[in-house]
Amino acid sequence: MAHVGIVDDEGRPIVIPMAYGRAGDRLYLHGLPASRLLRALASGADACVTVTHVDGLVLAKSTFHHSINYRSVVILGKGRLVRDRRAKLEALRVITEHLVPGRSVDARGPSARELKGTYVVEIALDECSAKVRSGPPSDDPDDAGIPAWTGVIPLALEAGRPVPSSDLPVPAYASRYRRPGRSRTTG
Amino acid sequence: MAHVGIVDDEGRPIVIPMAYGRAGDRLYLHGLPASRLLRALASGADACVTVTHVDGLVLAKSTFHHSINYRSVVILGKGRLVRDRRAKLEALRVITEHLVPGRSVDARGPSARELKGTYVVEIALDECSAKVRSGPPSDDPDDAGIPAWTGVIPLALEAGRPVPSSDLPVPAYASRYRRPGRSRTTG
Image (cartoon, rainbow over all chains, first blue to last red; front, side, top):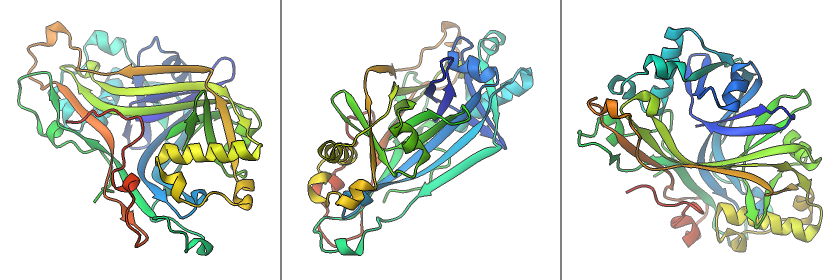
């Protein structure tokens, strides 16, 4: 998921979690036209889209040097409403595939009414910055004698056993789900 | 982790991932005084702090009804720099304990110099809104015949085996780490 920030009518920041998809140098967001956030994005407001993967807790000798291993990207841009029917369908497919690769083939695609009832917003990936922290803690040499364990507790978003709502066989993309783009950090 | 939004000097939103801690009706953030975000928060700028726990992917018959199970809270407020030494130490302890319960007892606390080199900002939990989506997909009755599997793929941030940097025995809080406040969603 991404965290999407906009500035509201009173000049205050608002940050909302959203699903997203990416195709090349374009990021796609979607939602109901009734959503204030979607309307702001659709009208070309400045937006900041931040995606963070937490990889681990870094325990150092001193609390000061405690840290978090993570990968994050901060994207600055303006939203643009996708109106073209084919481009909109493709953007929605990209969002679905980003969440569950393989799913868009099985599920029913949007009806004309559903498509009308969905805003799709595109943000160009022109201004992005990535940050990564990885590896072990870095301790002050003076702290070597402190009897506190140091190291990394790896963290990763893991999938559990699918909870079915239907009697159909569980497809491979659900039973062997792997978060897209994630590197193994456990073990 | 939280995603913290502020409005920059040019009126654009900026969203940055940050560790946080909470004590009662106060949320605490910390960082280097050199950080533009910390300086903005310390000067009382409007902030939005959003915390999201992703619990699962919800697969419906139609892509339109696909969803994400999650719990999120959006906090609106203004930062206030914590200057009092005792309050600052306590806030840092709260942040450490939030990340790794039990850790603040073992690790060395901040030196006078480290304390001076850290900004702690407090945000009152006065204006918060929580959102939760849970449970199975909700399908249109007309879609019952579509041969796509439906259900939920549970997701949870799970801890892996600790990666030690020292020969000391692994403490219980590292080897049996559980993300604080998380309900079991797998299984």
